[in-house]
Image (cartoon, rainbow, N blue to C red):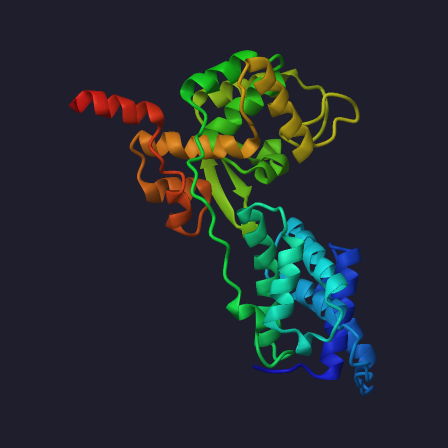
Length: 331
């Protein structure tokens, strides 16, 4: 454990505050400027009241560190939201926060929430206090004894091959056909789809590189059906946007997450599929169908961009159709 000097702490706080307002800020350059200005000054912390909270200052530093580690802006935003919410209920110095404070807060914050959501909220708090402890800001980690809520295990069924065909037939535009086929063929995350540019695609190999979680790059493949529908869609466009998928109306901006979610929901409604159909369901379907077709787990892991094979294993649920077929085959 170690504790930063007053001057170092001020530098980190300033950078943290600035990067929250200006995400594209060159942190190294700004740090050099601030350190140059403060070089001949001594910085001492101001005495604070025993009832004052110092969470805001530490949170700014924490977010700055996590951003440097490559966390996505979405994760940083969610982290900020949960820790700020905590600070509004537990108003005391971090050094005095105990496990009971955290448990009481979580009981109120997570009342009525599902177990997985409760665990997500708890995870943000546990990681924050773990960092505070590791950096020497608190003598003990009060979140260390928090236990995850046991989540009920439910089999999340992927789309069947029949449902995939229903979705394809329900598409009414070249863009919809290209999107549905591309989602199913690649297993890409929604955030990855929205960031793809036309020039990212290698048509001769039917491959492209995407940027996934943790700013990690990986290569994905797509099939001939996706290639055909993509080329038909791109050939129909008259805009100059670099994005692979764009809006229908001028100025033809990059298609965003919510627009894609809404599009898929509308297609599913037209297809008569009476269950929630969303972008991640295509990723689950891609993985399950590939595994059921005999693809090795480590290969599917690479396609999905998972660090841990256990994450990929979640998708290795044998389809209902396969279970029935195997039962009848051996009966």
